[in-house]
Image 1: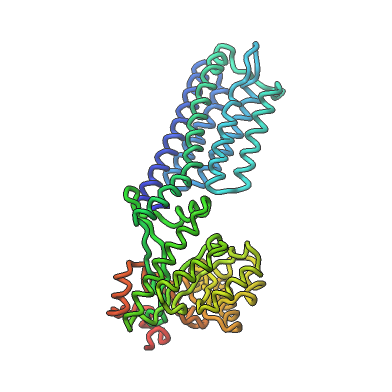
Image 2 (image 1 turned 45 degrees about the horizontal axis):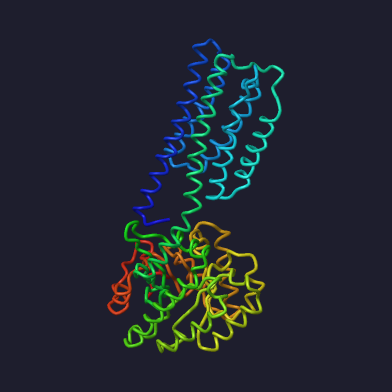
Length: 455
């Protein structure tokens, strides 16, 4: 996912492409509908009109942005139509084979492309159904007892026209698949170049108390591509993971973060701030991670307690014992650890008591609905209770409204991060917000709440 403007442009292009495809399919089906109708074959015309209606429905779904529903409707309706048309009308005759089933491998490939984008059992079912139906309809002369074969003079035309159309669509699907599979490699290549050119930077999102006093920040990696604009970590981080670049990227982030802490230690107003840095599982589990971090600490001569490493439970892929030992060794240097996305995994409680973490981060997905959803509210209270019992601090992420803040404060949270207190910003802007803070204007909800209005 790229920057907001670029992302909107990309989505618009995808929508236009899907609209063009649906209109092309609808026009092709309408062509045959008219041919069959003029030739007096009303049942065939009615059957061919089915994909015309389906194409119009899909066009409407795409236009209104319902892409996931569009894909489901398009794939299932097309699969049903092709199989039904082959069994009822497009049957082998006069030595000429059926040809409508040639679209089934194309449908299977398109379903695979969609499965890569968003894996689901339904997509796998469409893939399997398309391939099985293609083999069966190609190998066996299956037809319904009441089948009405296409008139021979029209069937001859279809024998040439349908394979040509299927081949054309197949080539388009091959190109789309190649683009989809090569995209991460291209991003990874650009990412290496970005490291050399200095296109990567850190943004700093404040972590504050309830009054907005800044206690520290989380360092967030940003990439400003020279031609594509801002590229989201949601796009380039998975590519970096896939091609083994996370240790390289992560070292860059640590280098920049420690340089920032070294800069802050010379200013009394900044020296007490903590800086949180996300460390990926692949980076943390590298054999030389501890050595690299020790060298960086020695070079920058910073107070290790000011640096907080954020880990997720995916780090445990290397095993609980080696991870706990490495964390203990780094803790002995003065470093602290935060467990990110707490509560979103399956084994957090089982290993929490074994890992030397000092802080839990309440995931933004829980915070978003705490003021309206009783279940999410109960989960946040439970996380806070666990942290309190274990002597751990909590940071609530994604705080955007006074109502969320009021609930979190009542639950015992003391550190907050989110748009309500500040968006990620360049280093100079963050430092200015600490050195010369601007008073946060009270909202109507805060003014009406004694807990929020209290100084």
